[in-house]
Amino acid sequence: MSVDNRAAADQKSFYDERYGTGSYMAGFTDLFEICRVNTVREELGRLGSSAAVDVLDYGCGEGRYLPIILQAFPNAQITGCDVSTLAIERARARYAGSFLEMSDEHAPVHDESADVLISVEVLEHVANVRLAVSEIRRVLRCGGVALLTTPCANSWSLEWLLNRLRGGLQPSADGYGRFATDEPGHLRRLRSSDLEALLTDAGLVSDHFSFRAHLFTTVMDHRLVRRLVPLSIRVSVSMWDWRLWRTRRNGATMLVVARKPVATSGL
Image (cartoon, rainbow, N blue to C red; front, side, top):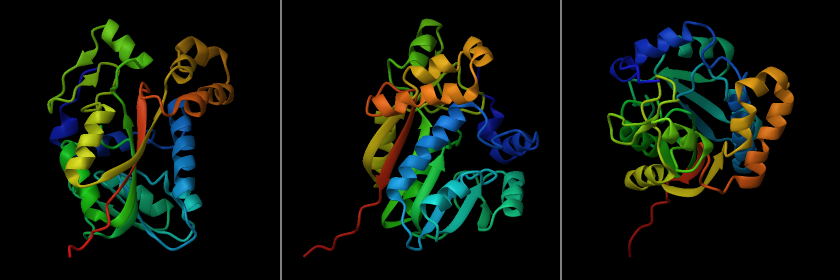
């Protein structure tokens, strides 16, 4: 699929229209979403704490990740922000917390106001990914941690191979490229080296990258398998991509944990 130009030119209207359908990002209903939430829950569990912390969900949508954040940080003060007015209204109606409308990539919160930031499947959607990563750095306190997920363009995933064989490795407006199989709201698909460079340029340090969707997820999402095999079984099989190969860089989606360094004073 080609990019829908409205996704970059008028993000608020584009995503208000999507959320207006009532089905966009409304829950964890398909294979990729369920496997993603499983991995995010696992990573947040490693970071979690019973101490009170300030958490920002950057690109929160209707707030579907808030219960998962609270599992890891039960005493957290959570703020969610999103470019969609409609999504923010629904989040306010469903969850306790503070929900704020974004102006494109800008998060309407103070500098260094978050101990933890989570951003799930957002960087492929924003018009200016460099600005978005800079915002993530701005709002984190020194020593704060960010958990980010986004589709991965690294070579030799099954998804990359299928797109290459079919001529589906497309250019993007900002030079990163994208896959023809990406949905029209995906403006780019980053390689892990691209994301590492964006983090470094913004002043963030990556702790580790993890990767999903190497083999089993792609096979389990085939239309014939979807028709014949129950979702619960497909999820169980697909999670072996994570258990066996999370460190292999040829996954079609990636997760990174990054930190804002603690400032050190010179002698």
